[in-house]
Picture 1 (spheres, one colour):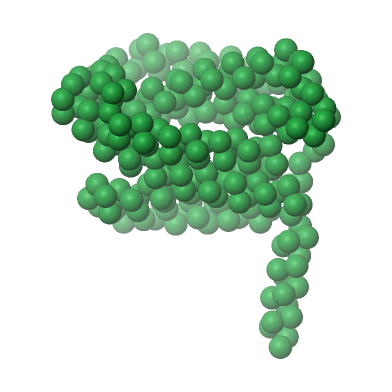
Picture 2: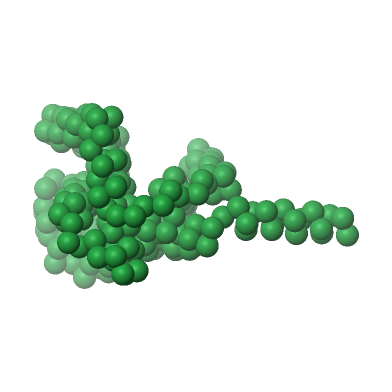
Length: 254
């Protein structure tokens, strides 16, 4: 009886410790991980099918754009990204972003089933660490500060510290794309992962800002009149296009 009471109390503390918006963001982030994880497998099958009859994406080809199976995977990813986008509107980035690691587990499981790519012991250990890390962050996620307009996010994004970080990220990305990928892209997966990760770190901030702008707009405070909203939109689109291009190369080459 005491055990049940303490368990119930612990559950109550956990629920009370998370706001309603955080819970919405959590559910959206989890569903996003499922769709995105599955999309990688569907897209890889599409890329392989397209590569068998045209120029492979790994060497600069775009024949996959005519492959329905690749588009099925792309649509699945878009659904996941929309859910992920909505999650950023409700929950802090420190809660949403780590949950994206769960898509790795979905991809690993489906790759074993659909692509016959066996998961070795270190892969299994990595999946376990993803679960442990994501769970820890969810249980200790902070409450999000109240944002009244997208202009507030812009003020934070234009502080010297973040501008310095963005400049370093862009410089590193260009070096990877124009120096390392032509020389080592076919043999070192980390080159492509580096580009996607660096660009992704900028897209997180922009997606969060755009999510807040839309959330405030739907609640009656129109943020579409601010030029900052459209600048964040441009950054999001540029980051997504860049990531998709290099993710396709990673999926096919490795």
